[in-house]
Image 1 (cartoon, one colour):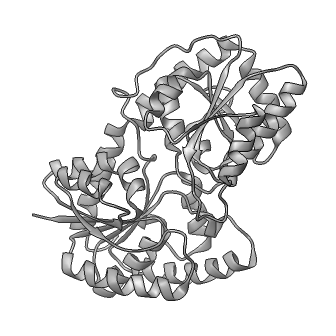
Image 2 (image 1 turned 90 degrees about the vertical axis):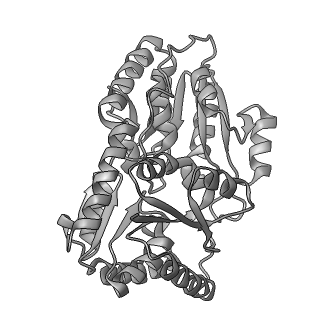
Length: 380
């Protein structure tokens, strides 16, 4: 039995975005290994019950301590040697670096999954510029592996990394995000409310855009345009970009947002909403919240960055706004709030776009083809 090993930074991210594809690979006859930073036993137990073999990487998501990185790398190297995967599928930057060097050294088939390029390619501060310099040189070494494939979630990330590195286009592929199952996220007509609901559901990082939405809420309130801003999300206390819980609670007490905390039933929040907003400047793949919202038939508004831009067709399936243009964000959100008919039309078209391009069945099929290509190809 051929082995596929997923090496990913965090357990919750694998559970949220990759389980469906891993189950499809298992059903296709592969033995599935998951190497991740498992925090507690809850997620690990659920994955084990699905038939996956789980291994703790102890790789810290947020740490940029080089000694910690090297120590984790040694442990992961030994672990990967023990597993001996037929295909190593690395997702996010640290696994791509650690697994990439391992695969280059042993001439192993590897898929590097770029679910967005991350803050290393977004932040132009001195420290991140230094990290980016060394990351690109490591990538150039890794990409020389003739059995290395690069999988992106949208074209803009592919073009950016091709321009910055020595990667060759023939070793790259674009697969449109994680996909969404339209048979689970059913279309529903929105409830037309006197006070519309705008939903923001994401990790609570400043770069995800909640601060801009709060500013928009205040600007529109001053004009007499009122809406309820529902906020659900995951706190990221150890992240330098995290919005402090005290700030979230302050906005809630002021009545600027309706803080819902972490929610396991985002589907119900989307159905209750009239608009879903994600004015993110983060360098990410296709955001799951926008996939879910589009499948349910909700108009979405977002900044015109990579993954958002690949999903939303401006003024057709939703609204795209120039990055960090809060004035335009307020204007285009107001247009959606005062026009239920426009929102409904956009929602119908969004659902059609999900079914034709972003359905999980299509993504799974492309992913299984990629595994077959990785196993059978002598080089890219």
